[in-house]
Image (cartoon, one colour):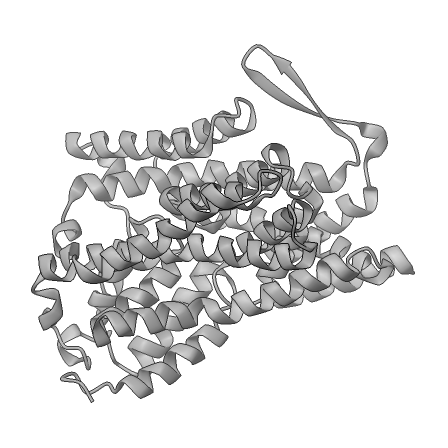
Length: 450
């Protein structure tokens, strides 16, 4: 037992339970953690839970996994954070690896191809729903609508790199917050509602834990080891990998992504998808849609789809290795460099989180980034939809503009109609994610094989 009465063994069982229930993207995963940790177990109070979530939203990476690491660290120091974070991603990593194997071995079989045809329609609808859901919450001021529109046009028509778009939005919010402009005051998730569990009444209590009172001491050992664990494999792979393999590109690209993944999974996947398809040629746009369908139907962070991307990249560019072995190593390398930094950010920054809590400029930067994310996700939704609906998609360049030119003769009306039906089901009738995925997969079978 610990000073707050939560045994490590019990915490281990609870984190595994949360991991197995963490479907539905970050919103669903955060809701599961809140229900179990705050409402059911009463380990952490409402105010502290929201405080931790706001801090995690300021960091690059999947905020739900980082929230698990943060709360695990609060309860049981570094070992608690490691266990919570590892268990949160482990079921999804195993599932995506197994499905990646099945995809490359059986993906061309007619029944499997038909299933994925249907799943693509569900993914298009889910991403458009994310635009609506996040936009309704984040765009409450004309200035934020303008940021979202600029972000969309910068990506869709100008092909400005994703990190530059997010950095520009964050700087805009930062300076606006420092100037006190009302459009950017706030951001984050607010305060605890009346009648909810108070911090003082939780198992953790309302005081700062002893191990959080010594921030400089806590920053030395665990973060330093994590930094080496993250960057040493990247350096070794970059130096030793065969030049005709994808390993060096996987290590460096996904390490950059880990430092710049602000704005949630859908925003990041726009960057990952376009880089993997157009720059590195690891997979096609249709295969990226297939991967999102797999990730939506498995537990863990949605960004776990990057493991599938790395698997396909190494499978197709294996160097001297057998393709399946190369794919497995590529997927594991991707997962390592994607998620290891998440532990580093929490263990290095959590002791100083109180300083960030009242920082108006940081909150404003987060608010502006969230607004830009709406435009980023809209770009992702249209990119997916155009590649799904049209067999031929060219591009024309007019000055700085890159205009997509779908060939009307290549339109797949079955894909268009199934996407429309999926959109109506999820937006109008609020059909659940699993029901939508199952229904679209069944429709794909009937359309392609019926």
